[in-house]
Length: 289
Ligand code: NDP
Image (cartoon, rainbow, N blue to C red; front, side, top):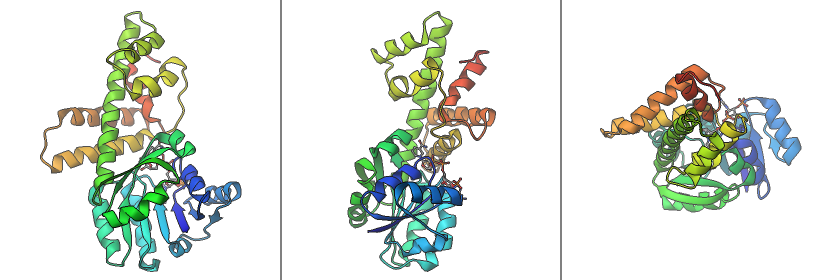
């Protein structure tokens, strides 16, 4: 199958590699050299122009937000053939994705929101979880393609449902990260080694993905890789907050999480990794990691 992947960032780059293992893949990236490098490293075709991607049977977008996806839809919509499938693996906004799906449906193009979870390690390993929002018929088209880079492929509901559950689950993760960092910081203040604090949490009721997988590298080994921009995580939590607002729901923990992450972002800057919020929590207490 001819697939065009647009957006070779931290996630899209390895996802395109996995697709290329089973399909004829064309890649396009805003910064051209990245697309050229992908083609030379992984046998994909570098699209000379964005419009060249319109010849593919399937378009996969992996972009920062729904706004960039919309910009690409604007440029490609007039060139796409009816029957094309558009899979948006961006962690986007369900309100926007429903509008995009309706826009493309007028041209006979199927759209699915299919955000992913599992981080850059999951993307490298091809073991991502994929949360698909689509009709059953469109999901049947998406599933075998998502299987190239994903291990668990969930049909969450109609268009928009994938983007909705993705920002909800990332908000849950954010709250877990924050409270775990506070806990380890407190433990250290009380004379307990952070390594032991995490070990105890993991053997007890404080265990989470944060304590097991995310924090040991940073708080114990002192390594702070950039794997997921805090700006993108903050975007996810803000989308979740907006959804809560539009549903007129009382979700104070979500609201607090959003305020904390936005404050951390304003302090740490656009290029910070999401777990660097730990540094902000420490600074709030006159400490450093
Ligand atoms: P990156 O910042 O690493 O990559 C973003 C990509 O989008 C780059 O290819 C960039 O091109 C391109 N891009 C940015 N702006 C534009 C634009 N205006 N027009 C066209 N292309 C543009 O992001 P990630 O790969 O980390 O994230 C992508 C999506 O996946 C996000 O929605 C994120 O929330 C989600 N996600 C990320 C995870 C992670 O661990 N990183 C995990 C799960 C989901 P260029 O090279 O030119 O900058």
